[in-house]
Image 1: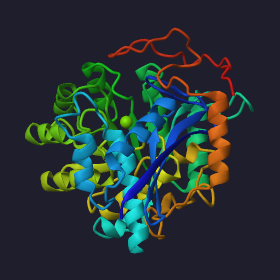
Image 2: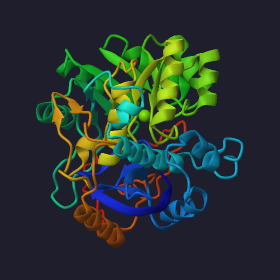
Image 3: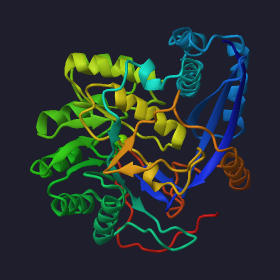
Length: 414
Ligand SMILES: [Mg+2]
């Protein structure tokens, strides 16, 4: 087989409500690039990358000069061809490589008549458990619904997610409001669901001392882990010395160099693997094997996925033996998807690993066109800006918190 074409299409897909985070906000939708790789025998493999627009599409078009004529089975060679680690100082294409790897694995699975998980060593589980990803949210500007700001709203939202999807793990995304307010909310969450696990992620915006204070205050709760309370390996290391809660990261160990540094001088207990940030599903499988060797914990990170990327997370979750935690996904915040059959379903907090050949999801071209047109109408949005706080710049460590008593509606163009 040979690759004959690479196409990229930017889409934007609506969320139930804008999601607030420590560095800004998802403005009520995700922007993603859908990648299609075509081979000389007529197979089309699917990939997906975060963000989009003309420049992202142009990057994928430019990869044709490297990859037309390339055998999609030669995945290691493709890594060095477009993402040679010593060349990446000038041209970091890790996320581009990831999207192309997804598509090549999808092609191989279709050609060989097996799911991607069978290519990666075979599945150990048929369903992957997920955590409820609980965000502070602005109300949907179209309906006025969906706000999560007060502690009562936090608990009502978590209860609603548990009833709709069956989650037994609740992740609170934080770093938005003053730490003491968020501590009160997190304690209330843990006390409301005493038989469920909880985890907390302020996206690394605290000082090390604040991280220690918070970590010590939650020691009695049923924590999976405290995720990125501070930014930087040494801040995490100092926090870890003082806090009896496992620390997790998706920011300070995101490549093999950092994984080696963490093995030699541990700063983090649990690594959140991300099929995009690590450069593909296979890179995550390799990293999981390193973690198995060093008895480091493994979880699955979410960077805001549609169904194609979600399927990469499902195949990853199916094949790694040491997935000891429910995976993260933003997926349950989406209103729709661009794959055939619409949104994949949760059963008791889990999603079934697709069983069809390749990634096991196919494009719904009608939806692709609809959400591409929506992107053309709306364009992108600044993920690291908050539409409700014009002029705000989050610093690290941050002390410029949002006001939990400020319930003014926020205007977001839609
Ligand atoms: Mg995180």
